[in-house]
Image (cartoon, rainbow, N blue to C red; front, top):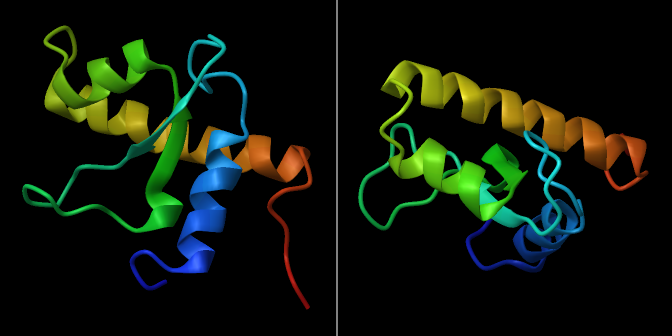
Length: 96
């Protein structure tokens, strides 16, 4: 998916349409990118994003409570839960 493309924007809008944080249930989400393997200013693929509240997003990106491995595992879980929420809502499906 090309950066800034219409498809990328649709994906981000679909993630943002998940109203509750997939980790804690708080209303009001941000589209959070997976940071592993990326440098400053580089974003992961759109499919590696999750619907997170600001507190969970901060904890995964900058928190001091969890280890790096625990934060990465939490983000992986959040991505899967976001995909599940989008599928349940009929936003994410298989074409063809």
